[in-house]
Amino acid sequence: MRGAWRSRNLLAGGAITALMVLIALVSLVWTPYGPTQIDIVHRLATPSAAHPLGTDLFGRDELSMLMAGAQSSLSVALIAVIVGAGIGVPIGAFAAARGGVPDDLVMRACDLAFAFPALLTAVMITALAGPGAINAMLAIGIFNIPVFARITRGAARGVWGREFILAARAAGRHDTAITVLHVLPNIAAVLLVQATIQFALAIVADAGLSYVGLGTQPPQPSWGRMLNDAQTFIWRAPLLAVFPGLAITFAVLGLNLLGDGLQDLLDPRVRRAR
Amino acid sequence: MLAVENLSVSLPMEGGRVPVLADVSFALARGESVGLVGESGSGKSMTALAIMGLLPPGAATSGRVLFDGRDLLAAAEPELCAIRGRRIGMVFQEPMTALNPLMSIGAQVTEPLRLHLRLGRAEAEARARRLLARVGLAQIDPHRHPHQLSGGQRQRVVIAIALACGPELLIADEPTTALDVTMQAQVLDLLGELAAEQGLALLLITHDLGVVSATAARVMVMYAGRVVEAGGTGAVFAAMAHPYTRALFAASPHEAGGRPAPIPGQVPDPQHRPPGCAFAPRCPRAQRDCVATVPVLSPLPFKGRGLGEGSACGASAASPAPSPPPSPASGRGSHVAACFHPHPAP
Image (tube, rainbow over all chains, first blue to last red; front, side, top):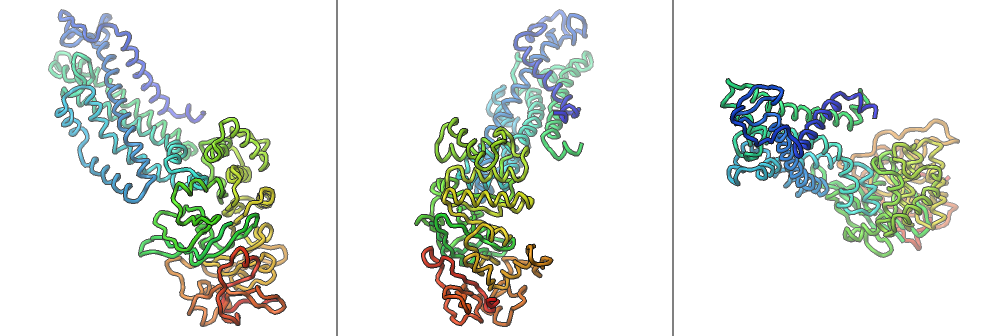
């Protein structure tokens, strides 16, 4: 455990991520003001004691919106990663266990999926399927599938080559049971690190989709939407663009640091070198 | 109980199929221990994998591997899964890597018990504890993980796993190679004891002739995918007929002899095996006829020894008739070798 405390990345990333999650959870039960509560009289207010981060063009409290935005951004990203991992990991594990033609087919399908620019296709999918948080989750999640399939397959292939897998086969285990009992636990670290990185990417993707109006729909606040709203008043109230921008930056930074830190912590070679 | 008949295996490699095992035949009776000896690359491990049905994908086989009358080469995967670990156990070379680093040793010993014998958790755990005690790990907490154990202790865990379900056949692939010398003797003794106690047949794969002489009743020497000499351990050690066997013996450290003499050259790459006797390029006794045809195993009719002692080294063997594959009934102890110019009996 001492290695964990020596890793500043892990500490900083973990703290930022924990704070984000905490804010998102708190926003479910409490925000300083209702995040959709309009107060036209006090629109575009600068930060003050009453509104620590000011108000937006409708007089909604910026802090409350950021908190509620954290909740919507994190949940979209979380579901997207779960969709990607939930489908991609079994596909990759299957390819690694089978090898041969099924493996080739899966990997070429992944190559094909990687040939599409992810965000643009997500825009296309939400434009076709209709805007909304659920469709945004699915659109971003679909592009996480090949990422998880490929990394699972690569890591699992490495484990399949190890002698304890041969030992498990010699003990009479079926491939499926070996995958669940022996392969997946041994690549869990790699997958966890990848999941944090994908989580960060999904937050950016969600912000992008809601910025162009295809993600989370108003009145539910979202960071991307807030950026878009702030754009009109960028000269009169520049802070309105700065705060959601900072929120996205911090969320992504925190997750990336966490991913880096986890990688160092879980990779014994790096740990020993330190 | 186990009869390997004319087993040949070839693997797909760049440039076509490459034979890795050619015409390997032997039989193993209940309670019998046989040593399989040879350098790395001689096909020892491949023989074990073929018996277990764990050959690499794409391997082509011919011949038969009869286990209690069932041909394992023709058996479907579910049937093999039911035999592996249940009726045939396997011990691996590297105790460092043969255990899952993330599972406690107790859980790993419990696994085959729950899988094959369908024992409940408590019952399996009690039995795992007894197994660990039997292999000399009574003092070790079953909740420990492999990295907390020494190499010798880990190999004992591997043995406990292999024996968990009371198999009839135990295949030990270089079980002592990765251990230090003091551990080697202990692990071998344990294997011998357990084999005798449970009446199981032991196929001991090793490159160390000393290990074989200490443990196995019969020995088979393999070179480049073929059995080149076989017979009762006593008979073979008393009169090593094949030059390879002698070279292997000379290359291993032993109490009496001086410095080990390495065998010049290397085991031929399976893709570029020489014609005729594969050992000819490294053989001090090689003559012109050695590169022409592949010598077959034939009985060694040594002076002063009864019929049934034989060599497959062609030139000296008066009768060129190849021996039939040794069967459990007739082949026991008959000394055979595959060489045209075998060493004469002392």
